[in-house]
Length: 381
Image 1 (cartoon, one colour):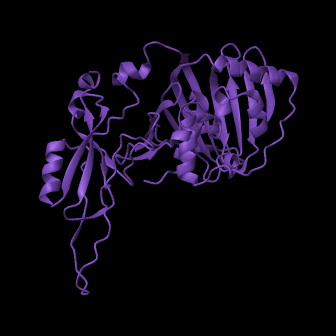
Image 2 (image 1 turned 90 degrees about the vertical axis):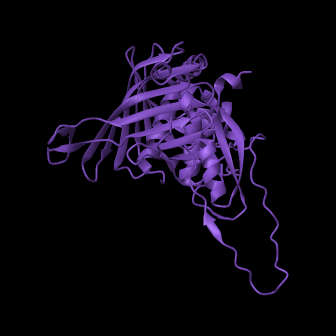
Image 3 (image 1 turned 30 degrees about the vertical axis):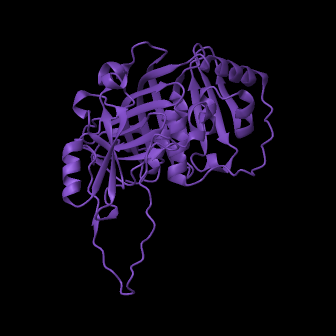
């Protein structure tokens, strides 16, 4: 499952507004294959009106107080070429410094319903449900989950991108980036400044940021400096995404998703889902074992020796006993490794990662490494 532009924008907006900046930087790296050039000349700091300078300082100070952020959202995606609006709703959740989650579900749209956005002829855009999807960042990996196809991909987060280094994401200034850094990376303009709302326009100064959006408009609550809405204009200029937020709460002791999903909203429940693409271990983690590459053995005879190869089956979601039995029956060696605590009892001792990845070509006798969810009660001991 390749990352789609719409999905990338979902991660962008989510991260802008809920501070999961790490989602942004990693999705950007995966989808675009780009990073800011190391030798890129630093941008001169923009001189701003005093009112906007004060807002940025207040925003930075208030953001520093937030450890958790959660709420509801409505997403409206506009395609000006096909004159279609897609409408979705869902929840988001963030936990400092680098965990985030957004759940998105297409809304029920009555037959023949129209958008409230008019076109040049005075008619209105068609209205359709948006795509069902989930994005989860546990601080080490990003899970991109396709709800319709029941499949997902996992991407590692390099050590240097974790934690407080989320500021290297495309829109991190939206959650506490120092005002000075924001002015270096974005052209900022204060559009509205009243006791009821603050609206700021931001245009990227770096090519890497401009690859994801042409302009962003951020609406803040001046009493709390929490996000009320965000609009992203896509690079093409003929698509845009708007998120409208409600019931946004900071530092709530019992989170919405904790009540709904259990103890840990950042551990995805993927039983019955198919893993697509590359199986990824935790980037840079010492505890992760990778198969040792054996030196190529050249045959004594000069006559080519044919050796059978097999496709490694997908064991993700299986209990380790049945996974080992099947792999050993196919002629593979197996080795299991303890991994993260299980989010629910039925996942204990079930496989959630494997190396080599499913579908990879392997030879008879090669070791397949299986990483298992462990009993959270034993993990505490």
